[in-house]
Amino acid sequence: MAAGGRRAARGSAKAPSAGVCAALDRMLRPGAPVSITAYDGSSAGEPGAPLRIELRSPTALAYLLSAPGELGLARAYVTGHLEVVGELYEVLRALEGVVDGLSPADRLSILRDLGPRHLRLLPPPPEEAPGRLRRALSGLRHSKSRDSAAIARHYDVSNRFYELVLGPSMAYTCACYPEPGADLEQAQFHKFDLVCRKLGLRPGMRLLDVGCGWGGMVAHAAKHYGVRAIGVTLSREQAAWAQAELRRLGLSDRAEVRHGDYRDVTEGGFDAVSSIGLTEHIGARNLGGYFRFLAARLREGGRLLNHCITRPTTKDPHRTGPFIDRYVFPDGELEGVGTIVSAMQDNGFEVRHEENLREHYVSTLAAWCANLDANWHDAVREAGVRRARVWALYIAASRLSFERRHIELHQVLGVKPSASGEAFMPLRPDWGV
Image (tube, rainbow, N blue to C red; front, side, top):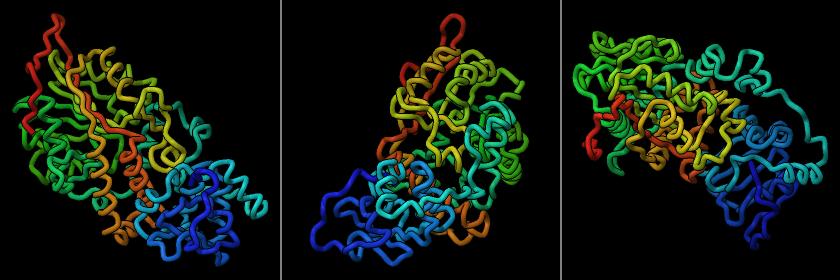
C-alpha cells in the first residue's frame, strides 16, 4: 500500500489512533471511507467507516514492511494475515495508490515509530513464483519450456474454478459490451462476433487461433461462421476442456484445439489468424519474430486480429509489477499500442484498423469480481483459499488499473498484402456489430 506522504489533520470526528495503527494512519486520505484495525486493539480512520482493513497478526505488518511495494500487500492478503471487510475493489479504490504498496519512506517512518522488531524477513507463500533471477535457472525468458511452465502455473489450476469466475463463455479476455445494460455472456459473444467480422470470416475459410484458451473463439467461428478452425494453447487443462466442449457442441469435424506451442504449428495458407490475449506472453524483444511467424502462416490477403493489454505509452516499462509477475503471469510483458503497430507494420502486415476497448475491460472485470464473490465458497473448495485470494486481488486491482488508464486494451487489425499491394479490404470498415 502506498501512502502519499503524511496526511493533513482530520476533523474532530476522527477516532484517535494508538499502537500499530498510529503508525499506519498515514495510509488513509482525509475522508476516505476506510478504517484500519490491528491485532493490538488499535485503530485508525473514520469511526463507522463502511470499509475496513484488518491487520490480524504481527505477520501482516512484517510482510508490509519487509517486501517492496505491492508485494508485501499481496503476501499479507494472500496468507490471510491481512483481511478486508467490504468489497476489495472499493477498498483499493478508496485508498489512492494502495496497490503500489508502502513507499520506502513510509516503511522507514513506520519502523521508527514502532521499532525494528517489526521488520522480520519471512518466506513467501508457496503460491508465489520465484523471482526473475531464479526463474532464469529454468530456461531463457520466453523459451518454450519456460513459457510452458508459466502458462501451466496460471491456467492449470482448476477448470471448474475458472467456470465459476468466467461464467459459461469461459472467455478469459476482455469482452465487448454492445450496450451498457448487456451482461457478461452477451458481451463475450459480441466480442467473438466482432473479431470474426473484422477477420472477414466466411464459410469454408481456415482460421488459426493462437493462445486459444478454452476454445471460445474456435467454437464461435466454427459454429456461427462455418470456418475450419485450429486453436493452440500451452495449457493442458484448457486443451482438455476445449476438446470436450467441441465434442459436446458437435463441432469436432471442423474445429480442434491442440495442446502445444503456437510456434509448432506447421500448416500454412490460413485465411485468418486471431491472437486474443497472447501478445502479453510474447515479450517485447520477440514481437518481430511473432508477427513474422503469423504472417508466414497466412495466405496473401489473409488477416490478423491482435487483441491484447497494452501500456498507455510506448515509454512505459514493459515488465509487469512484482505482484503480477510473481502471482499471476510470470514473465508477462506489456507494450504500448504504438509498439504493437510498429512490430506488425515491420513484419509483414499492413495495419487497417485499431480500437481501444479499455472501458469494456473495466466492465468485464467487474463481472468477474461479482462472479467470484457470488461463488466464493465453491471457488475456495476448488482452488484453495489462498489461490482464490490471489484471483480476488488480481481482478479487483486490474479493474482499478483499467479504470485509471494505467493499462489499456487494444484490437489491431492487419492484413498480409499481395506482392502488388492488393489488400482485399473494403473501402471503409463496417463490421456490422
